[in-house]
Image 1 (tube, rainbow, N blue to C red):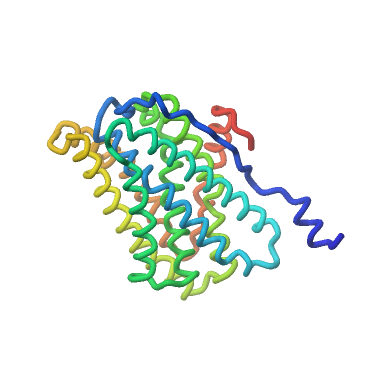
Image 2: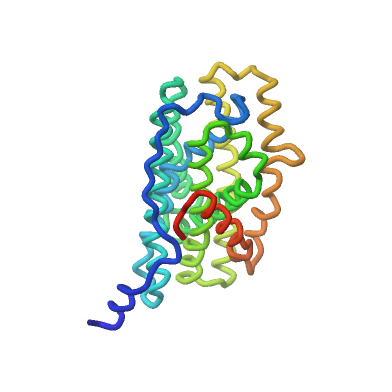
Length: 286
């Protein structure tokens, strides 16, 4: 057997692909703190995942043939694709079951891919490097959110549905397991020089601005569809939970902006202890 083929056969990916099949039929309408805004804030993130994850997979798959000398990275790309596909599947399944509450979250899913696709073409340019840079930026953002959720047991305690808590913690673990794959692909192909750095940080600035704006748009849409648009006490509760002094998003700002350092790498944010803790807690293989 060819030595290169033999190596690819024997190597294992750095993390596994886990097959999941959650049951969402009995999920509470307001499963976060019994509050519309707090719940819809999580849903506003969730609806970005199915087509967002597919965009990430497509961007990495489009350039993987350019990596010819790193069999371990190729194995990790395959596992990355598998994990992201499973995330898209499970969040989409949740959205389909949430139709019973009359919020039509599935319609917001489709907007995400169209936004990423059109923004890449119109604002950034339609190129493989730019699409991969979008993926690197948003993978860092989602990985940071995921690590924050694993740290914030107070937020977990507000999740009053065990299925949804398990979904989000499983997703958080896997986001941190593969958080450096797209970034490593980007550096492997495009390097770490000034041009590669400028490309990734400009795209991060654009991507983070768009994503935050879209999240708030989705939140407002869900509150409107739920008849809660003028529920100011719920708005206050939800916005305080996420954007207050100790808010969920407020606390990740420093880690998010670390991406703009020239020598940044995702694993400089060491989440190995968190991963070990939650893989054990959830009974996940490693």
